Amino acid sequence: MALRPTVVDQQPVELTPISSQDTRVHVETANKQTLDFDDVLDGGYGWVIAAACSVMSMFVGLLYSWGVMQAYLAKQNVASDSTLAFIGSTAVAGVAVFAIISTHLIRIAGTRNASLISCALMTSAQFLSSWITSSIGGLFVTNGVILGLGCSIGFMACSGLPSQYFTRKRGLANGLVYAGNGVGACVFSLLSQALLTRVGIAWTFRVLSFVTVAATLPAALLMKDRARRASASIDLSLFRDPKFVLLFLSSLVATFPLLVPPFFIPLYASSIGISDTLGSILLAVFSLSSAAGRIGFGYLGDIIGPITSLFLTLVVCSVSVLAVWPVSASLAPFVVFVIINGAGNGGFFATMPSVVGHIYGSKRLSTALAMVVSAYSAGYLMGAPVAGFILERYGGNSAGRAAFRPAMYYAGSMSLGSASFILVVRYLATKKKFFSFA
Image 1 (tube, rainbow, N blue to C red):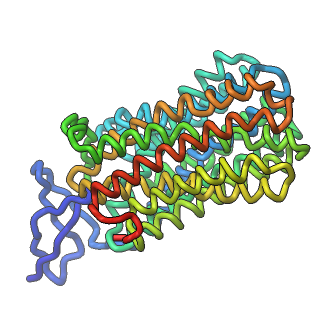
Image 2: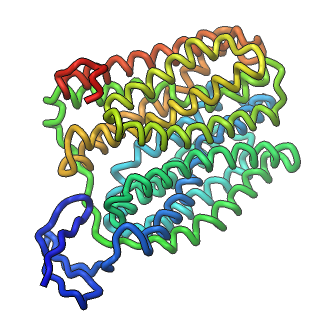
């Protein structure tokens, strides 16, 4: 008779005796529910789960391809740049706003059923949008609120499931899942631009809805829980900890500028004489760079520490916006900006959960992370619209690239401010000099 430790939702439970002939592991959880787990970790069906979650994550990437639609609608004079940016940011903000609601839904209905609901909402949002392309109010509801809720459920469903199937390879599995988001944004940016050119915006929305249901429905059906998830809660006592206050403020400030580049890349490309098609390709490059940044900065965090890695992502974002974007008067420097900023942008989202786990451990991770993610909502909702208002104040996208500079300085300074908060967090967490890499 041997003893093997089993982990449920990243929390250790008591050792359970198994024999060499057993093919199942019998686990009694803290709430006295009995579950049977396949005696397979770091492989087997877990890779199916990772693939299914990656597909679902790809369609959450629909949110970050809105810049292509925004540029098209702006040229049709449907609404101002700031209003159109607000539609896209509403959907992205929904991921954070509905995060706790989504978590409770997943706990009650299970990951598979919640993923099916996500599939239905994302598909419906695209299809309904195809009938109201000239209605700003309608697009706020369909492509803003409904799509945001659907993506929130899908994102939260994918966020915790791989950890039920992987231990030693959990980082790799999560990296593949989160990278799917960047890949999806790339694919849908190119697909949307191609469809807009050939069939117009109404049928573009419809085709996207057909593609969404065709891919996410099978992925949702493959989802399978191994354990009942813990519910995220709110622990106000965390605000007594200076490190948490600074993390919360850093997240609040950092997300204001993060959506400015992906939403404005097509508009800026047009202002310097780049075609709409090439502008959509640049947005796709940004998304691929974001996917690479999620994996790269996540791996870097294992080497130099997650807090230091998070600080570097924010510095990269700030420097690229303040130093590279303003001098991007032609294609070559603009491509450099897109790649660098995309990597830093994606790295932020990959490293923040690691920082929270590093500081508060697995026992408080779900609560602390849910509260930190809730701070994203303000920046998601208002970050790009504020940049849009600034752009309009200086003449709009038709006034040339000089009109974009005040918005660039706004975005870059916000990233720099967020980095300063993280620098203090690192000092409080380590009590060592920053470049000690401890």
